[in-house]
Image 1: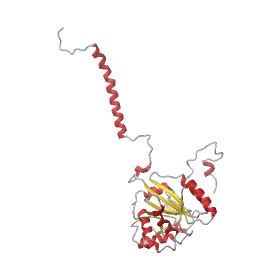
Image 2: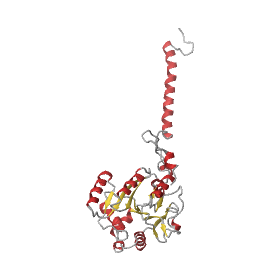
Image 3: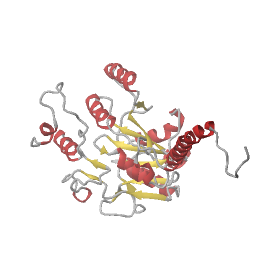
Image 4: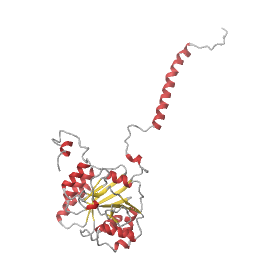
Length: 311
């Protein structure tokens, strides 16, 4: 039969043509799916506030809480306070720091604490407040630690630190030649005027190494430890980067005149918590137990029972 000029379609071809459309549509949908996943963040991926900061690289901070060996109960309380906190911005390690043990009871109980928590540093010194303990703390770290840190803090044991705001404030700062805290005198806003309060100040690791090796601090260890550190850095022409974080760091309301003010949401540290009612006030104000879930296991313990009681 002569070809009339129209394309000849046999039965097999007619059956194949309809099957090509679903295949092409499937391929197109698969391509769109791939492009979507490349361009759009996975909605199930765990998100943090890291993306809101200049750098997402985590840093490390050692918090050394200077205390005394016999204060077992207070250490356990502080472990609770800090054990429920964390920050995606930093590796934060906390250690309790005191001088040589002098009693058999201390050796036994603290050995148990070390086995359980591994969060204690025992310095080679006699227990003291203003006779070189802070110098021994900083100068010993490069020799005794198994790792270095970007920052090292010396802190009192009557301070409540909020670790996420603390890490957030440190994240954009220089990692070297840094001296950070609450500048004294209380009314000053200039971090270069004098020195940082002993409630909790931070040095970058290079300054810790300098303290360990310099004759300036080694020959000047007696006196108020926070003032001494400021003097060392001034005499050594160190700490060109200084940050005083006011009003986020302060003394508990009513405790010390111009160094104290009312609790504020932006708080990083509250100092001079000497009584349990003060700790309870702080815990309630910052809603520290907000993650507590109602359970039949905790009869009578819920949000209202924690926050509706008068202090």
